[in-house]
Length: 181
Image (cartoon, rainbow, N blue to C red; front, side, top):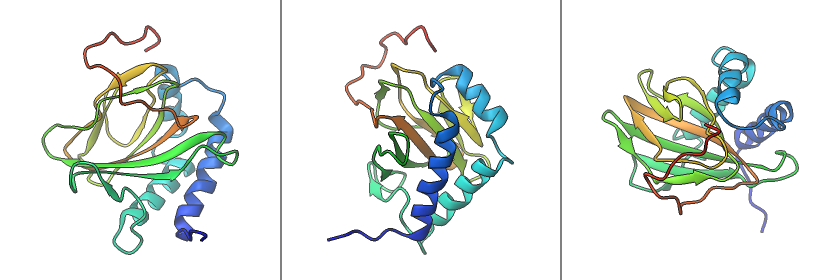
C-alpha cells in the first residue's frame, strides 16, 4: 500500500534537495556552520522556507513534523526522508524539544557529521550546538562529534540532515571530541 504524504512534506523534501545540491560537498564542522549562518541564515529564502514548512507541519492541521514521542510531548522526532538520490544521500529528520530550563535529549555521535537548521517556535528558544547556544540559524557538528542535544528558553525544531543517514547512540559522554571541531 502506498503512503500518502502531506503536500508540504513533499515541498520540504524538494526544497531540502535544492539546498543540499548547493552544500553536499562541504564537510560538516565549524567552518560550514559559519558559512551556513552567513549565507543561508535567517532572512534567506531557504531558511525562511524551511521555517514556514516546519511550523505548518507541526501544527495540528498538518501534524507530520516530530510526531514520535521520545520523552513525552517535550521531546519528539520524525524521519522526514531516508537518504535518497533526491536528497543527495542525506537523511532528513525533525526533532522537537521544548523546555524553559536546559533539557537534554539522547546522547549520540555523528559518524559523518550533521547539518542542522534551528527553527525557533518560541523567540527565546535556543539549541546547544558544538559552538555554543544557537537561536535561529544553523549548527553543524563535524564528523565524529558527540553530544547531548540540549534546548532552553522554549520550543525549537531541529531540522537536520545526516550524510548517509548516519547517527549512532553508542557514544560515551566524556570521551574526547575529534580534533576537527
